[in-house]
Image (cartoon, rainbow, N blue to C red; front, side, top):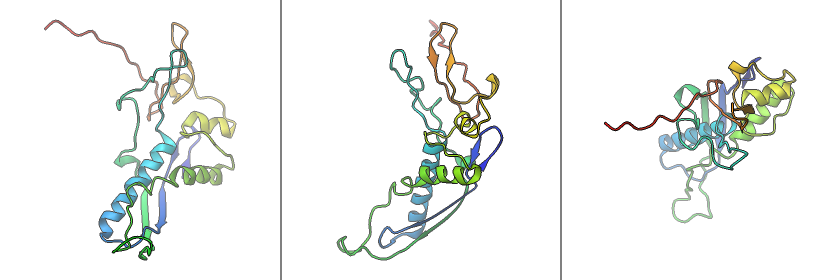
Length: 178
């Protein structure tokens, strides 16, 4: 991983070797694992369901404010398979590999952050404010906050998060009569 002074973490390269039984379609299997690893990185770096502490409702209930990884977030992948049949599975010795790539990705990112910085970050997601706090850099200026506790003008604490590190400005727009 690469960790910059602002606490932004970028996964540069991902290597995974999987024992998933006999591989029937290597291209499909590789794509499944890459997708799983990418969403595991999303779990580690950006995905967060944010509750409102006062009323317990979710502040980001839709995908407009719930960030998931996209192609621009994808690192270089090196995926390989053991490709030995699983003798406990009937017939072909193949197993399902749908989400197995997700399993170790957040822990791998946490360990990579530790190896890059010498500091442990233990709470998901590893957004810039948490990484900066672990490094002892303190909080970011208001304009650059990612997920940080903020007070609204009416005194309610909310925890907004955006991938770009800016606080989203949202407002309800009434429907017109047209």
